Length: 422
Image (cartoon, rainbow, N blue to C red; front, side, top):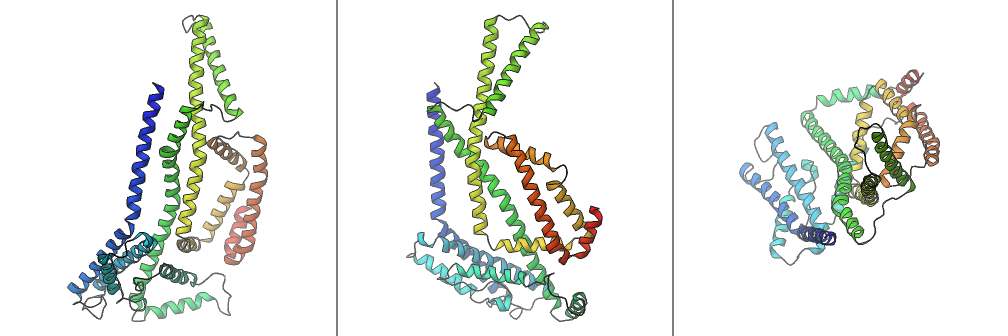
């Protein structure tokens, strides 16, 4: 009965894996056609706007008699469609080797896309440059690098100071820019650029958190656990991964025996014969063994699921390297936007949490949880050695950062930090 159950369960798992594999293959091998179709539809949307709103000419202020707000709407629509085309063409180029390049319909769509976006240059509309059929993936990377360069070119707080404070020059420059004819248009463009960078930074942060978590959960539940159950059904499963788990199981069984004896002495339970007591203890031992067998299986699957999760985390970073610049820009904006008191408060809060007086207890709980998650014995000596060294290293890094950077970037924040720390 047990063998038939596991064989049936194994067949169902195999069918699910095969179906998922076929679905993935279909999605992967149809990626170039799907990407070109979406890019073609975006190019058609641009052409439709040109014909209906700008008399068949390119979307620009010179081609139509529209107000600034209406023109901003059409430019936003244009930028959105051009972004779709850029992303889908990059996706097509990644799967170019599996695409059917002899398909005349595909080549016609590529030609139409290239003709549509070739009208728009970065100098005229501050949008992406045209993409050709034989464009390599470096073009997309270069465009991202140009945006990154704009971020890097922003004024740094570590620049050399002149005779007069830099804030005076910035104030006069800001007032002068407000009176230029293109001040409103430049403000809208800067706002859109800032919003786009913030969206990309937040999206990248969410992907860094969500994708590894989902990968860890689904790989454990759908892949690793069924495989472990299959091997455990054919072989004798391991109940205990370490001596600590075995000791916990024995203590739990002894506690159950003492509880039965205690209830019998207090006459709260009916008198049991030695055979019945032995049967109760045996049933409890089987229950405890099943519980710890599940914990052992879960710990083994956690190890492999965590490795897969780390691989997915590394892949997200490798595929989105250009977004790291936007993360840095967002963090700089947040940090430099805080007051000196807020900066000092956050520094004290973070240092006290990780290297403060009560932090060893938190590190101990954290390390014991990690050991239990991976099925490792929580060695007290190893935990105490880690607590004695790692927080000290963190504290040294914090102090060096405060001495090296904070004293130069924000001397007032450093003074506030010293006053609050004292």
